[in-house]
Image 1 (cartoon, rainbow, N blue to C red):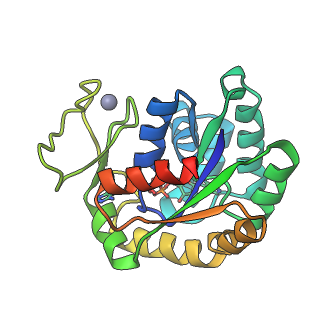
Image 2 (cartoon, rainbow, N blue to C red):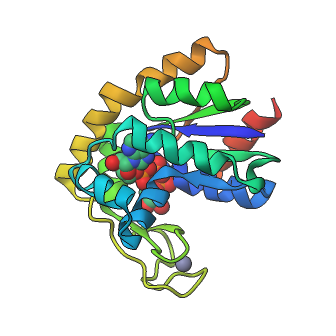
Image 3 (cartoon, helix red, strand yellow):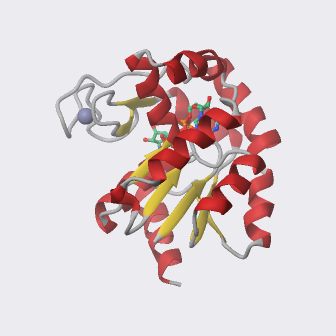
Length: 207
Ligand code: ADP
Ligand code: ADP
Ligand code: ZN
């Protein structure tokens, strides 16, 4: 099963990709996570990507497409994968079409105001990438999975969130039509609680 999770920043792509990854034993491929790791490692890609990411802009297609192409060649992708945050432009989707056979595209649909609230309270574990929210029951600044100290991402501030939403509307939202035309689009209501969204996503895979 090769799946894409589409949707604005904060829609819940990472949250649900993590859960699907566990349940179906296929890797979650987050270009955002790969880029953040590259920044941490101080690689050439990281140096190139940092200013775009801090400003809430998209990293250039050539950089991101090369990352995705390389990652999808790995052995663990042979039985399927979940793309989380890639593609984000029509050029990326066209490049992906040349190297992959996508079964489903899940569009997690959520309004802008809900997103600002979600992203302002988002916390992530920098060690294992688990996603949390400060309003969730039992939230703790220590990662429940690996014991790491969870952090707030630099781009999860209101100004950068609004910029990312505008970038999404202009550059990524056209992919909804792109995949609708290809007959691959499944839309789920991302405003519901995580357990309900997750159930809807799984139901969509069975259909
Ligand atoms: P979110 O989950 O909030 O949408 P991501 O972790 O997916 O954020 O992405 C963080 C940042 O990394 C983006 O704002 C962008 O700068 C960069 N990025 C990630 N994926 C891509 C992509 N496919 N194309 C261009 N830039 C990307
Ligand atoms: P994305 O990968 O699309 O940027 P995340 O999965 O990181 O989104 O989710 C953004 C924030 O919203 C996180 O703090 C996450 O815990 C929270 N969240 C995700 N889905 C839901 C939901 N259905 N209801 C409430 N909060 C959610
Ligand atoms: Zn952790």
